[in-house]
Image (cartoon, rainbow, N blue to C red; front, side, top):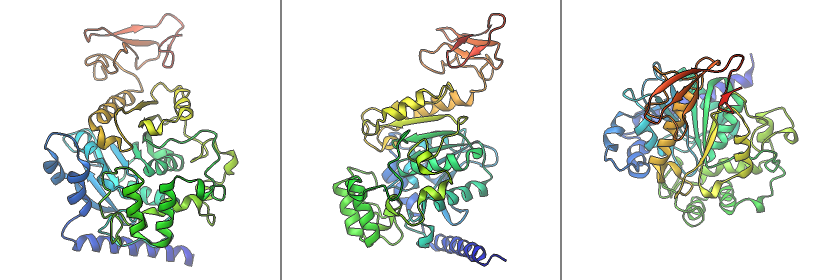
Length: 404
């Protein structure tokens, strides 16, 4: 009997039971009842109260609170990872358009550990990036999901890159919002990160977490970060004011030298990694990067352009600060819908159930790969669809968008 492993498992089960008991005795779910419509839903349609009544608040895996909508047994899954200082209600505008049994997808938005005010504080040993990935994995495993679309934002984007690297077999495509990963950079190894050269808000977050200082965290959010939607929200379970010092734990991992996050994630030496956040990115997982002007990364954009898979892409979201999906929900949702359609049909189009012509799938694009490599689909300007053969001994090249 592995006593240490058994103790760890019992601890996880005990925390999950405590979380279930806490939410079971609570009269409401703060994230769903106070954040979803009041803070994060910015679509101008008045439909949020009705939508919120259909969203389920659940406890999954190892005690992770989730927001869910749709049927995981019959619909493809969108998994949404939020950031700091936010809650899983961040994705209200996307739940409205993509999620539910009357829509295309089942959706689940798990909470970052200690980012839900109604659940018990996690054990300090749970506050690591690798444990966060394991908790996400436990949620996905309990729901029986595979072939998921992972959508990640802010600190959730860091977790998203890690999750794609660690569990690529579960993922069909990946959307990352406003936090790039930098090819070739080696600046984030614990021990190499100079605290004084971190962005000031990250310094404040680390100090606040280590000191347990809710006031310092709240002051930093309200004076340094900008205008986060949930800046007045109580987020951490033990917060006395604002988001709470506990929400800074993820930033502390940047500078924590004992049990470094890099060694948790991979045995590959950090100096051999291709990116600052992960050793490599799976070649067969398409990526869409949506970003604000503040998070333009030319090297990351170049890497996406050079992938050559025909579907990975990027888009600057105009007139938006960091919180893209809240400030410009219509633009973000339209791009997601377009990209989902393009990647859904990555195996090829036809003029029947996978018709890219009526309506035109991508503006200005009139030629598409057919489901057989020796042919292609041509769209007319009036929405007509035609299947045409390539010349003898030629096949359709998805990257060049022509027969070769």
